Image (spheres, rainbow over the protein chains, first blue to last red):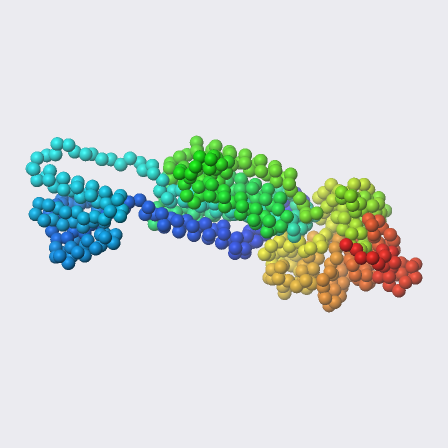
Length: 368
Length: 242
């Protein structure tokens, strides 16, 4: 056993303070809910709601025989697999009325019938994008059939190739945005409430009267918050990469870990300022909420700021959460690497250093 | 002098317009049960905070167990134990986890912490969270946390405030036992019967000064009154304090 002197006691007090803080955190059900479950609920909810935001396959009801569709070559059928779904019914008048009713109600996108050489397409004008889509597809099928009927090889052919998809899918901004929000909540609230609570309960003074280094106390708090942030990141990425949500990680996705860690330090420094300033836990709670919620909105945690007014985007440039979210999106799913992450990490650490200095000037041991 | 646990000379501390401590001098001998009495705002708490090393005095010197307590003295800290007025406990931890945490801050093995819990009669409550203990149990736990590292000098700040008579008598026995083991105990209290039965000597303070020091029986005899409470009222007056 090592007692009282040397690094042994330092390590031991670091360990026991870490344990005390971890138990205090895990036993606080409200805190666990707000830091883990609540943001995850948002991810699942928004991820599900926004999943099918783009135009997906069109549903067409074929009433009776339509030669161009029935005689479509297998190769062509294969190409249209994710674009067009054809439901065939018999050619009776009842089936025709039923099909038109379905189109009217939006249950199907269009109905197709053939009378002699004329192919009739009926669609609803309610969703113009969808209507245009169905018309385009059907038109191309008819043209191809016409061209094939001539027996000549086509004069022009279209070769198409997919470029890398640069559009932002909802899950790509939701994951880093909501994760950043969750980490910010954990770090700001955890630090601020801990500081106020320990000052009010005189635990800070009690620690001052025990032979422990300030480093052990501060180190324990930082260690607990960093671990919490890593756990939040692992859970979020685990859920977002489920096939259902479909986040695809690119090469440097692991850079999100150093990003999250430096972000956590930046948010903890906000928590330190709030905790040093606030006199009661209620004040700290309110102040932290006033900081976090607007910051999350202005940083585009819940929706992208692409269409936001310019002044708002200028304000967001000063928020650490915005830079964290952007860099995270870059490394997670856009294949960006060190050149994206490094400046943001440096900025977040500088932010943390400045705010920690401010907090140190505001700091009080007790309420007197 | 070498046998003194605490030597305080010419202590002064000012907060803005208020002269909280105005030239306090006293000494407590090793092994002594020493009481500091005074109405609210007399300067007891500030005096104790300076002695413990929580605050820097404007003037005067403090020697605790032969060492200076300011600036923060890490060789002195393991030799003193402090029970703070409001119970300083970690959130959501059980009695056992609290005392084990404090033990490890002093590099004391967990077995000692369990033994201390046994000594204050809280073994059965070891698994109960500190905030769910009764007032008396909380006070006993906070005294146990102050004693877990076996200090030579113990500061107790109003340890029986808010307790029922049974819990007070129970705590008195515990405090006598702590003193009987050879530890110096410094106690502040508003209960004069408590000071009379427990303390070897008391110092009566008011307006930041020490008015009188001596064994309770001597003070009662000197002033020709019936009890220590009469001594206190005669020295500090009867008007209401803050």
